[in-house]
Length: 280
Image (cartoon, rainbow, N blue to C red; front, side, top):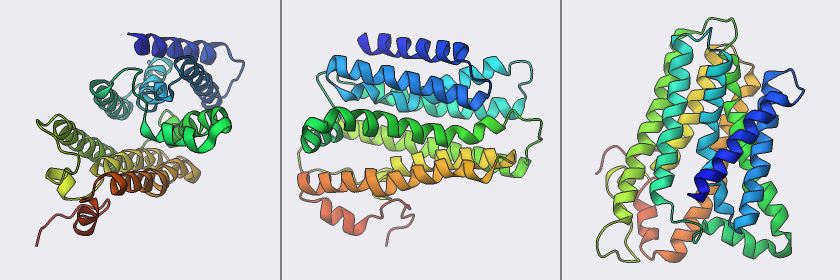
């Protein structure tokens, strides 16, 4: 499968960049490797003329980080490290497998990328690299930044650590059930264009998957704070929420209003992100 081969090449480029780039500070070595992998992903997207090559990058790279950390700190890993790396790996594999089961091959490209291409015209190669590839890479790296501090000599605040793990796992749970409900809905027999998923978690809020994503990154910020990570390491999770709330969701809302006549009624009765637990 071509996409798997591409990601193997990206992973190897990241490993050798991390290994041979002459940078001593661990966080900058990881960042350099992350950028190299992003550039390779961009080049593959040009080769296939399809920016959806990047789609799995979002969820694969945090697992790459976990593997690298486990190798680097293998002799000092403790239960807190294992819980943290296990939680991130669970999120990574779950989201990647959800992407894989919906992958339609290179004949399909995310509608958001197509819209950006149509709007940006000749500037699309720059928009493609900066907006579709580099910007999300920086967002993910910033949101992973708190975890660089879990390998310090500091003992974690166990209450804050437990809260962080709980929030992150809650986010994974929200995404898992929301994605499964959406997958079954899309595979329903005799689908109609105007139908909207309004049951289960999707009856409690309009974007339970985005709620889960926000919770996961918030949990990582709490884990970092349990290790007394600098305050600025929470900026990544805050920025992630703002991107979801004010970029991703509005784009989706606009598309749904244009394509689903009944979506306006769904909007009126269903909260955006905070679940409606009780029905009148």
